[in-house]
Length: 75
Image (cartoon, rainbow, N blue to C red):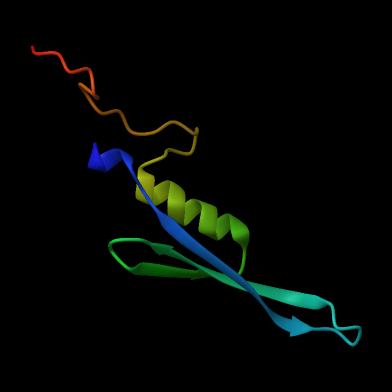
């Protein structure tokens, strides 16, 4: 069951502001809990792609198939 549980910590912060104090540049990181592998990004889509890659999600939105997932049966 461990292969089907993933935990990530997402951090997002403002890095630059304009003359009005509005954030104009956002940065962020995604850390995979357990491995402590961290990925830094400037575009939130990059964070999403990192997570998709880590969980094995394909570009169509489905995950890579696993056989005999939690059915409790014997072959």
